Length: 232
Image 1: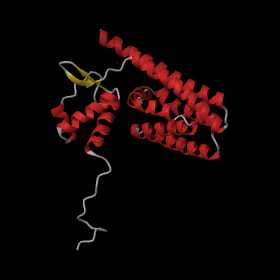
Image 2: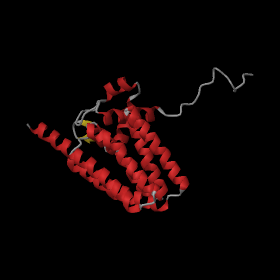
Image 3: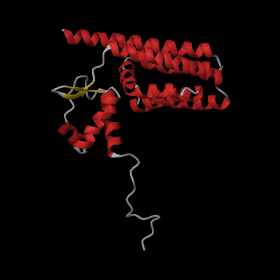
Image 4: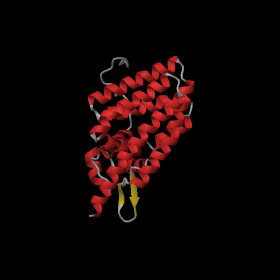
């Protein structure tokens, strides 16, 4: 009888399904700009590029549509959703409401253990900024915000943010492409952490507001310029 332990022939179950892996790859490609706004997403080439079946590609596209990264157009099929200031502005407004509230509550409730957890997330964020790896930066930023929402106890609000996360990451990739924003980003996060560490609710909300206002202004400038260019 073949032992199951240390069996070199045993097939390990993958931790992710093919659909999950395809979704992760496609989401990252759209966020990174590999697929541009308005690009058609044709099944056959995507099957070849991803190495998966048509059914997996179709399911992936449905998930990306639910995340707001893909649109299905009549007589044209799926395309990469267009990113314009009108929609971006709404996303920043939603973030402003939810994140300022969460930061404020987090600062009010944070105990020593919570602060240690958030400080660890800030350390990961610092490493990600230093490495310059975009995916690491997105993951570390998401973790930092997740800690704030968890400490604040605003789990439903975090679920809303997660549903917007694909579009938030797309905007984040665009704004971080500007030199000034990349250099200032970590300092803004430090101020948010410092306010929470001091249990200063008003300062935490104010730090979030400054951070998001700056990001929104950069996004508005870039998206408005892009629109003007496309209209010429």
